[in-house]
Amino acid sequence: MSKRELISFLLLLIFLSCAKKEEESIKSEGVFQDGDRFVFMSRYDESFAPEKSIRAFAIGHKFDIEDLESEEKFRTSYEKFIQFIKPYFSKKYQNVVVFEEHAGLPLIFFGERGKEARKEKNLLVAASSISQKWSNAISYYTQNFPEISTMLGRQIFLALTDTMWRIFFNTFSYFAKSYGVWVVSCQDSPYPYITQEREGKISDFVDDLVQSEFFYKATTSDVWNSCFIFSPEGKIVHQTKKVNLVPTEVQLLSLSSGKYEELTVFRIPGTEIDLCIAISLDAFVPEYIYELDKKGCDVLLQPDANSGAWATTGGLGYWQPLEWLGSTMGSIQQNYYIGCTNPHQALFLPGEKKCEFQKIQIRQKSIKYNINPMMVGNLFDISFDGQTAITGRDKRTRRDINYIGLLPLDKLTYGEKGEIMFPDGGFIVLGPWTFDLSRYGVDEQKKMAEELQKTLQSGEENEGKYISSIISADITLGE
Image (tube, rainbow, N blue to C red; front, side, top):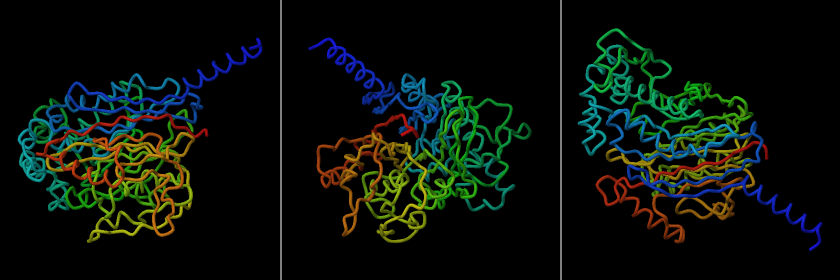
């Protein structure tokens, strides 16, 4: 080898070494101190332009009823994730940590007044117990807002305004400020119509564990399923209210609906990236996604809490993970995809198969990525399950993988013509399901998964033994 060839060879090695450092994939599994299992998966690339890029973290948080015994336990149940990912925070890009839908919903059963309810096995029985503990606050709100007299769910939310808002805000504002990152989390509340009240009988509105000279009071009868963006200073800088509610949110929780005309995007200061939020079902609705595309959204945040089994038939009558692709993959398509045109209406229809899949043409597209963290765990007899994912359109996307019980994206077709259901993009990172069935074929996966899913429910063999997913990726508009 000549001297010139040797130099060229060494330069090539240096180049490859640098490239390897810029692009990095990590996968590891572990157990938190409390015994909960987790998996961490990431795709990092430090070669992107910082003004066009962010480092995103999607936290598939596992919920436990014991987390509600105190504010410290609730905070710790989330902070263990923050502490784990802290070494992976980027020094080049801004860091955005996204938690699940309904992150603060379990706080209904918080503290001393929730102690007896937490012993119950059934959600409705537990809710009845809670309503008795907060009867004075419920009386106050029903007297001031007669329109909620028949809405038990709304009554409970308003009565617990202080508990649910105080603990939620303290927790996630603290994370954002203490760790210097953008934090996205969700709560069912009357915010921004909340005031700090110092007059009146504070003990009627504040849990016995809380020592305070004021209480948070709702000044409206509305309660929205909202997601909030907290700045690195710990302040709320953006709120999105869920527009399209699922049947349980209407019939059981008595939540209020947001409005399309209130939808906005949020640009992360110092970048060219516009974030937007589609809370669970909203991300499945083509018209909702179209509205966000028109507003120039680049990165769609889809916090989720899928109440029910993951490995089963979904609300529309199809395999649940297949229905889910209509959101995580449908939202990033540029030309068309095959799915349900009106899932927000179909869910309320009778029958098993509520919606026929059709080709949905994309009228306008700006959304490039979808970040979808999913809550897992059991809240009494209600289970929450799903696979956390980041999807998008760039050179790293994988089309050779898919959710449990599905063919890979590049082989997933529908109808007599055999059209590819989702032709654009793919998974940047896909978190696993609790049970690893990857060595089995699709049909066998589905059969086994449905049986294993049952074992995760309350009172069963693997009760609550879900795996938490922490997935992360550098995403960019620069390609």
